[in-house]
Image (cartoon, rainbow, N blue to C red; front, side, top):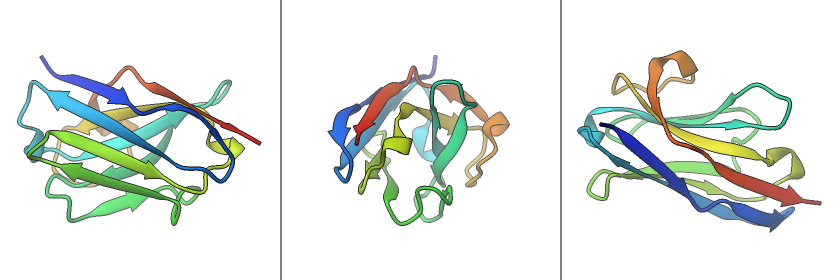
Length: 124
């Protein structure tokens, strides 16, 4: 059974940084692309960032480009989201997910396993 466990969320002031981690188990991690999504209260879940199975290709939402960095360590079976210059509008529950293919995509429907989420709150 595939399990994804996020960690690293918390409360931070605007302009601060956080690094989220997502530990995976139950499938050959290095074969699949990984993604981060987020959902703010009263809003739909939205794409944040994705990384290909090899780590060579990345894709970001325009709202986080230049501030967030996605990376992965296939040996540690973990994907990371480094978040810098955080803004109050980044406040959300952040979810990691594993894709059904090795390729980068922002389409949520192509991600077949999801973590339980970790809360990120950015105060102004």
